[in-house]
Length: 415
Image (tube, rainbow, N blue to C red):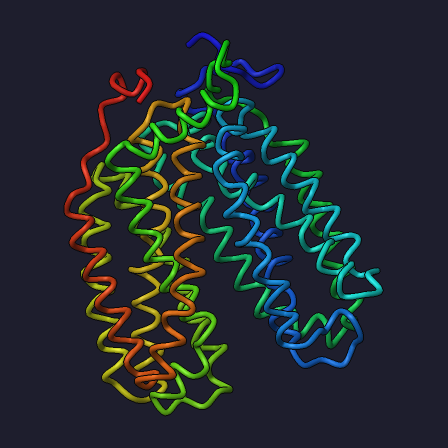
């Protein structure tokens, strides 16, 4: 295809499997893991006594909120950047910003400076997360696309699990500043690995000859008006909102079921572990049977039932089992949706398609946190489980309108 970039010294053709594809994906995953670890760093350290690096609960909320806030602002422009310049340029920009943030945060001597340095990493995040489909479509054959997308998305879950689970232990052994310095070194290492191994091989959007930003904005909204993209964006406005609300309010929500606060972290870990397994299994099934929509429908139907069951059953064991199954089904819908979004548009618009799904998901993540809070405080936190079940049922109804992705030949035309 005219205008398709190829890695230096690469003797491969886009769309044809190459042994290089797995190392490119692993390099991307290293950066993705680092992104999530740096984002979630402060939450596990809430209440520690180290000045500046262990701020108050309100300041921790600001430090974590800046990532989705910046994502909301930058996701769509970043999608245009990815389609124009390719995933390698985008991930390099994001990983460099992440490395700068990670290596400088330990030396912040005031909260405003710490917030600014955290913001640098936040700017890098959409460049990384929005690039997965562009990478997959360039390097992986259709028969491996869902699994590759699942593995790329898996880096989000692994990074969250490591950030939440390892940070207290690392801080106890090396000190809080030592933990921050270690994470900064890891961010720099991930950036170097991707710079070395993250070769470009996917199609870029044709350069605009006229219209400038107006033409780019028109193209972005044309992508959103593709039926599957619009539906998937709505689905993940709701879905990421539910996940963020549960992550923020897990202690009072589980406390309403009689679970001690000390179990909230481990139970959240069970949810993420289920998500890791689900992402691998469901995307493997999608590739094997060439079906994505039915798997999304099954996952949402099961999730609706499981959220309701979580509101009815008591006991740590029962809740751990339900949360594991919920992670398996509910969290596996993200890689499936990203894969379906990229297959629903021309190759040159994959970055923008992923960007819309992420954009709306971040907006929902903000809104539903407050909706769950208001409902929990007004009607009791148990009611929020049934709210989640009802929202999943609504997602299930929306998912019935999703269409199979078009044949590859049809994806050569612009939307």
